[in-house]
Length: 373
Image (cartoon, rainbow, N blue to C red):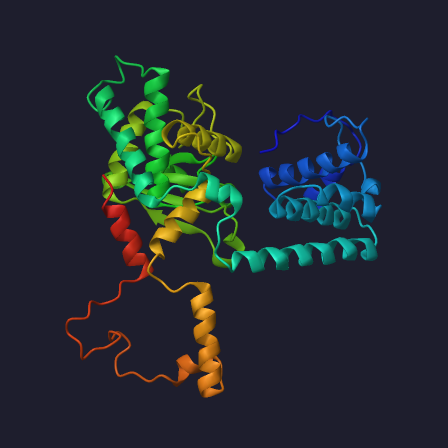
C-alpha cells in the first residue's frame, strides 16, 4: 500500500485539480491516481520530490520510457493501475488522442491477459502463500470472541472503566472480522459514520451519496447504508440489515466506541481510511494466522470460494457449453430457452422425493452467517 505524501501547496492549476474538475472521484480514488503518477515520475527522474505537485503530463509523452517503468512492476494488477492513472491524467490534461490510444491499447492487452488468468480460477502466488480456509476464519473469530469475554467488557461500566489499548484493539478485531464474515465487502467500512435514522434524514443528499453509514434505527435495529462502492453506478446504493447476532457484537462495540465512526484508530477518535483497514487486517492475521497477510479482498475470495465450493467451475461450465453446441448446434443460452417447465419453482427432478431442494447462494450465505457465534 502506497503511503500518501503531503504535497506542497501551489496557486497554479495542477494535474490533481484537472482530474478533479473532469471526473467525479472520491478523494481516496484521486489520491491513488496521483500516487501512481508520482511513482512513475520519480522513477523517470531521480531528482523529482514527491511532495511537489504534478503540474503537467509532459513526462508521460515518451511512451517507451513510461512503459519500461510500468513493465518493471511485478504484479499485473499494479501495471493495470499505473496505466489507468496515466490515461486518466492524459485525458484530463487534454493530450493528443494518439498517445492516449497507445496506452489504452496496452491496458486492454493487460486486461484481457488478466481476465484469461481469472477465468482459470487459480490462486495467484500471493494468494497461495497467504490463503486460509473459511473454517480457519471462523476459528479466529471464535478465539477473539473468547478473549473479549475473558476481558469482561460486556459486564463493565463505561462510566468507571476505560478499556486498555489491548482490550480495545481485541474488541475491534472481533468486530471487524465478525462484520466481514457477514458482509464480505471491500474496504467500504472506512470513514463510516454512525448516525441515528433521524439524523441521517436531516443531512444533505450530496453528503449521503458520498459516504457510507451505520444507521441506528428504533427497536435496537441497525442497517448499513452503502452509498459509495466500486459498482454503485451500475447497481445503485445498498441497504444491509444487520442480523441479530452481529447486532449484539455491534452493541458491545458501541458501549466503548464513542467516536461516531464504525472503525477507529488507536486514538479512538480518528476514523479508519481504506488503508487503515488493510493495515489493521494484516496485523490481525499476522498475529492469528501465522504471519499471513490477508486483506478484505482476500476474505472475499475465501468466503465466495467456500460458498461456491459445490458449484461447477468456469472450466466445467465452458465444457458443458461446448458439449451443448456439439449436440444441438446452438448455444447454452439458447438451450436454456428450449427447456420447458410446469412450475417456475419446481425442483430439478420433482418426481424424486428424496432429492433435497438446491439452496440458492443467498440461502447458503444466510446459513453461514447464522452459524456464527
